[in-house]
Length: 356
Image 1: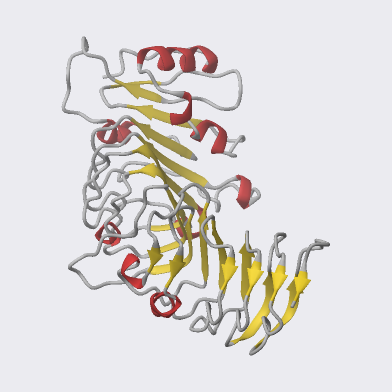
Image 2: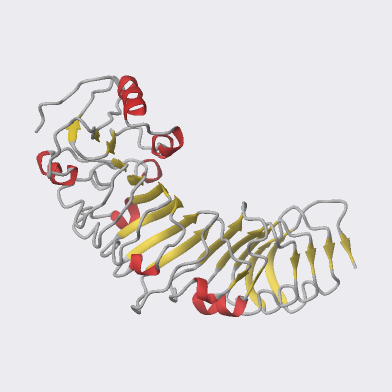
């Protein structure tokens, strides 16, 4: 099984993979996103056999890849992990046709409790690049005691990936990110998930979560959506209720004509305990009256790209501790700040601002 061990430098190995496996530069963002420079970086490309090149740096690249001329085997990389007792800090799986159930049952992770280094530079990372299919229960036997505060998971550049129902069952993680993946994300993908501190959707084609026949919720503290391709944002785009979400980031950088308006009553029902909202849309430059009326528990509100605040723009926001209006305000109606209060108001220094 391990007759094909190669001891190559990191540079040679990266060159070999790039030319044989045809991995594009933007498919290997884990090489720059990983900050764990004190620990080996392990990347797994496809499935058939294993090699472990050595590096002169304190950062190895652990690879698996396949070729048409090699003998096929039913033994997958995930099964072969049982022969490796190294404690992994970072794992990246690229060009895998499927991530199976209990994929991490044989994986030993380096825990924060083992290496007491600064946490922000020393978290565990699992990245999936160009994945076609997932099965239910991928993380069901993942063993990492402090995963809720330690584990970062990313699905990257997987435009045709299928989201299996319950794929994230039993998962606890600090951050889960979807970047340029299939935008049709079923909320059932999260069925039986335990907790995610920060969920990030970064996809200009995302139109909201597809509903599920199961009724459930899970622990989620922060939700970031970088782009959303809907004209009118409503509660139906978030088909389950998240009472644990306290921070919501909605930023539309790339979609022309998308996210032109929103139903703040329905959004408030989806996130009943929301305390912090960061808001930016290329299509919204004017804050209309009572635009945040039902989000009356907000303590922090940050608006970017806004040029005009109409009367009663922040109606019913009496719990605000900080209101940040960005750097583009040009006009404030005379009663823009009526029926609200805040401890701190941040306003741009522009000389063009006018108050009517």
